[in-house]
Image (cartoon, rainbow, N blue to C red; front, top):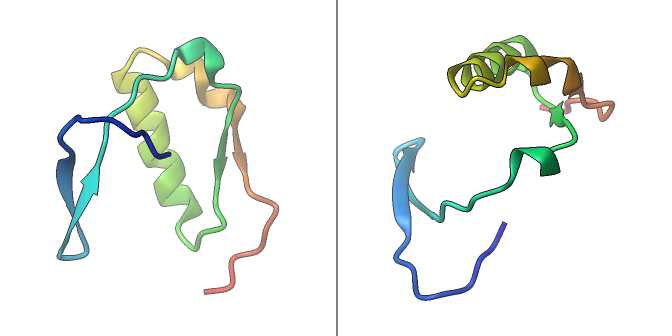
Length: 74
């Protein structure tokens, strides 16, 4: 997602690289589901997403998590 404006970016580290990003608010009722993948680490990402949703009080959205039908080609 790209958002234009005068806001200063935030930063995170990913694989020893500093990556700029912007936080945006998305209303929870706008979320219709989550697709994981393609990835070699589906179970790990699934567990992380479930934990994240639970930490936000959104465990009921677990039923909307699906695995990508696109094959992982890593």
